[in-house]
Length: 498
Image (tube, rainbow, N blue to C red; front, side):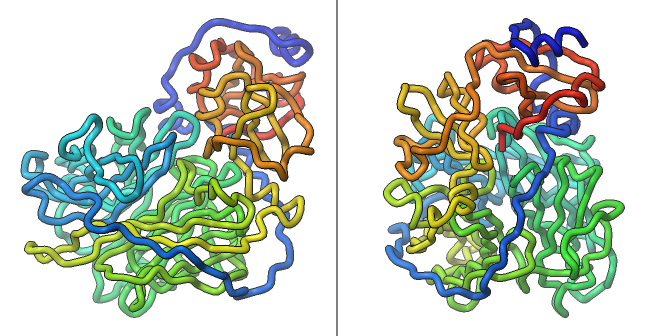
């Protein structure tokens, strides 16, 4: 305990590290009172259904992603822009990837217009397939991928076969987005609620995940949900600080988010009448965006942070479609920043299936997008905070500035900032120039860990939260084990990651 006290006063370097970042996240031990404290920005009064100006409609010249020759369908993508490349995971089927059933494929490209290939070129590989004898023994499909710190999380639909109400949501973790390990002991993290049994016997699945302010948000289909439509359509939302939703779960109901006993709690409220939707947080609009298919194309519906008001009128990305869209998002599930106009423009882009193939299933993944103009992301201090939360950019002294909840943290190493930030811009934003530096993350700064609390780093006598240990080797840091009582008595800073 004296060692942590000394760190809080002066700082030190202690050598040593143990579990991998992915293992820590999968076990639910990486988030503590700091790393996942879930402090929310106070809600402001919002006007409803404000029209948004749109411009620059775009679409790819053809199909951007497809499996190899025997992949007869391609749909249900999740798309991430990360470190200058665009990454995509989607649902398909390879005869070479046993068992027979849905597989999740992976590809990468320099832009959303593809062509997406496997790492290093070649056919996109299957990165997650059925696990015989388990809930996902035959089918793995509908991925939604996040990266928080150095850990990738994949939420997906799994099924043991074509059984009534057999679909459920599973989770896997990875350190590179390609090699995956099932979490939660290979068991589903969410299944049907069985509130109401309808003619549609799909069950629960089609997850979409976002990480915001220490919360993991999970939107999903449940055809047995009480608030689902007559045909089972509807999108329900849970949130928790634990990525696997094993504890501290809150469900969105008619009166907002409330604590529930677990992920099978009654589904009291749907946010959109749809199947196979996607979710993103748009900081410049201070709103969630829900992408779902309608007769005109992909409709983007907006909700405020608490899902109480729809602050903007929907916008539509027109064009052909046959299955749910995948919004192009940064690693934490937020909309990417416009390089040309970070305060006023929001790029909204999706990849979606566009036709029914020879196998009678959706295929033909194409890119569609447009820009929202006049977002007002720098119109007030509070909007600046939401617009650039989790964004990093070059500092005047050739280091990197990370912005978290209106604070500027100067980071010595670009690689460290790249892990902690949701997005790393190539140039600074002038509107942020007057914000003072709160603290500096020096090379070699000590990472501390307390059982049941998580990981943190001591900067200027304050303990800041970390999502995992991924910065330890990048920053030349060591890990100091400390007593939980000492942790609890420490001065607290913001969570730096996610």
